Figure 1 (cartoon, rainbow, N blue to C red):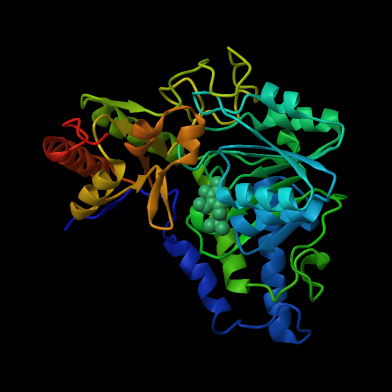
Figure 2: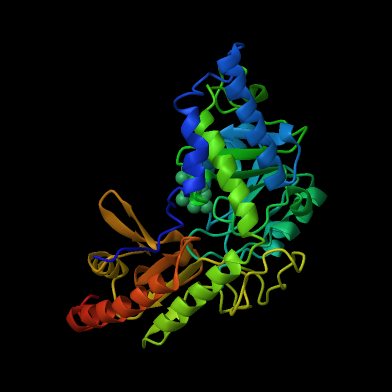
Length: 416
Ligand code: PLP
């Protein structure tokens, strides 16, 4: 059966070049990067080369790159490594759980936390961050791109606000890395986390940019790896794979791949929107206030014009590969299963907690309401997506929707 994978924001497959780059470091070049003999030196220089590639990817110094186990670790390190009782932390209610759960943990230890709500279009208005600041605000953390909607946040403006307030600024760039250029100098952040497996690299490896001079306590202590900022024997094959994925991502940012990807996403989106009772979550409602947002309007995207410009048809900037669509009179989970049976892998806008399906906290924070949040699906295309993938999805989605609506108690109005 044809299988079309449209869940790239969950994870991506390794590109063949990444596998090839990693292969020797499991077998012939298996040395420990801390050993002084030749085998160790080979591993060490592979890590050094990878660090230089990541420094180029971030536009920072080599010494500002800390390798780790991925996005969760980077996010946790920024929060646990900087905040102390009595501090104030500002973040948004649409962050990944790696931020939200860490913030909740810090709140139990005497850190005051403010969760800023998005607008209805899914954007964090920088003015709401500014309003939340207190004299004791030590850290602000806002994601670059939302994992569910793909919406790019105005991080450059938030960076200026953080700097003016004397607060540190962390960006969870896990879903933006490889989809928009990462320039930490231009954005003006102190910390930025990425994860290899979201950009066609291996799982369980990532990197944290730490601006020189940032007083960050390590999360893991032990050996003196990573300049004492992250103890533990380096995952050399993983680090090499991350660097190769970053190198390929830098090419894709320039060779038209993402423009093509945005066109595919737009064709998919337009095709699905031809179905009655459908719509895109976020992105198209520029200016509408969200719950908790004191503003009635929204300042336009504050970044440089050439930063995050792969937005093609919608007014709010989004990464090229993602769309989040609601389907009237449908349970999103039922549609995920129906599409999976037909060979299309997508993701519901909801997460499963202890057996109970909760509507997405991101969509709820945008003020969508439970029925619409539950009816929403995220389509996130791989960088390698093809016209044929979109053709196939556009064939099976309408069939599945029509079938489910025909038999749905939600559609019949009996679901409460
Ligand atoms: N942050 C965001 C925005 C994510 O989407 C994810 C993964 O889904 C993470 C952090 C966690 O990254 P990792 O899977 O590398 O721990």
